[in-house]
Length: 253
Image (cartoon, rainbow, N blue to C red; front, side, top):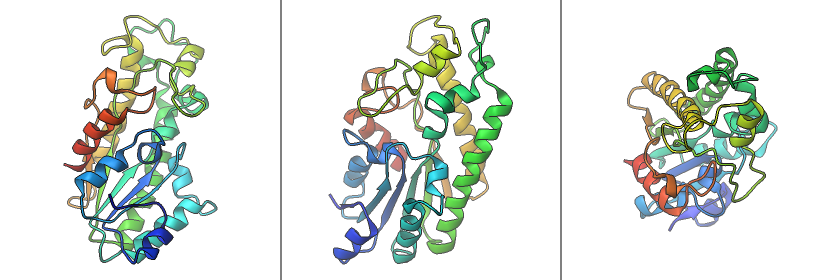
């Protein structure tokens, strides 16, 4: 597999990237991630992976952090060879003790519908920030590697069970507990808490599709949500190896 993890590594191999993956732990999780399967799909291509667990969209465009510098450097050095840029961004902005709790109503115990649990204004404000940052990434690709297609995805319908394979966890279940989100039904699809998560993921996907529509032929939104089975989740936020294999095939198709 031709995977590289810094622009310097790629340059040392006397190569330019054909594929660039930029984002969060869905590209960089140490146990399982999308990158390894994408390497099998894009066999023969040089793939540069720039990512880190816990990265928020704002981190990815922060001039005071190393990620933006590496992203720009990779785009400039591979402007004539890049055919596709995969972005995985946004999940850490709305999953987590403070982030998820901030878009939920403080007391959801009396609500009849999962969608009622959201503070619509807070969610809109957060999404405006996330998508402003994603637009910054898109603008950089369009400026420095205009022939590259940009791919977006909307994760999948995570199971809010409190499990964390690596890292601190407390991504979904803990904020729901604090905001008294009803526990009616099971954690399978149709259960109240699972549908709270699904509402968020579907809304994120609608925003991504609207964004992609602004760049026809250049930005593609891939609906990855609904791809994997409940048994293929490793923890609250990450698929297991088989789950990521399925997700990567959908993302790349």
